[in-house]
Image (tube, rainbow, N blue to C red; front, side):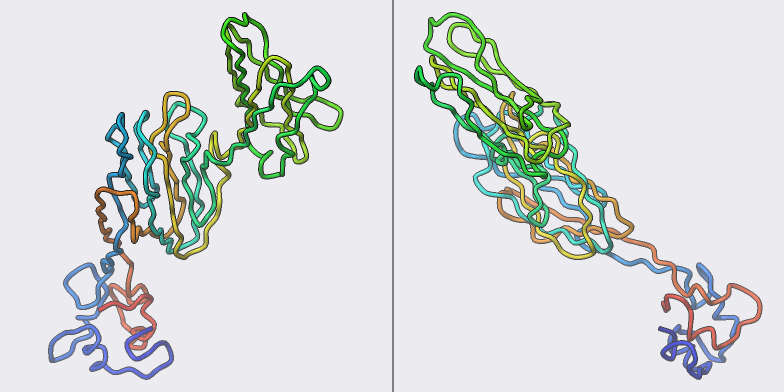
Length: 330
């Protein structure tokens, strides 16, 4: 929009002076575009509010809780940094993220452990980038003499469950003093073929093992646990969102709810040490953060916007150009 409403409208020197400022007598030399020294600026500074956020996340109150979990976000990322060996948040942390332009969001899991603590999650607009609760677990009871060796199905994989890097776990426990041996398997079967099988050795009663680098699972694969006569066997299927995070997702400009829980875990199943990464040409705002926080703060970012881009910096000025000055700014 220009001085008098846009290109094609009649314009006068007094209207230019009213829009941009200046003194009498009016001189067109006042209205060259320049960084300084004339009435027509090259740029203006816009402030986008809540473009950064920091906070401390509340921990559970049980003994053994360790402080140190924090939230930190800016224009390119939102990071939850949870110390290990802390209690799970009593309250979910929530907020709203506003993208001014289309944004590709990805996730990185920042700590060295692999399996996510089972209550931990990191969601944007109800999409689980990370969610430990999506693991599929079943304990198969010891069999009798007639069904010992049978396999029990614990999952038939959907396309979403089979995608990315997935894993298996097995744990086996027999009464103390039962000696040593090898557990029955947890396996992935495709039709009549076994494509992955996992067992664990046990000594003096128990053992556990995990396989976490399966990348060729397919929709329709069967996850099974075999019965044994001597003890119960627990099999677990671990989809991508419990290990390395779900696939990138594109969000259009708009406002989206974010939620996260479980900032602490233990040495085997980690807490929520993870980052959402934002790839966008626009700005990111953080609003209405609440829930599981003991403190929260936000910051603003100043952005330089090019203005009056059609107005010349020297030479002859056609007055009508002020009705089409690019981004008009007085």
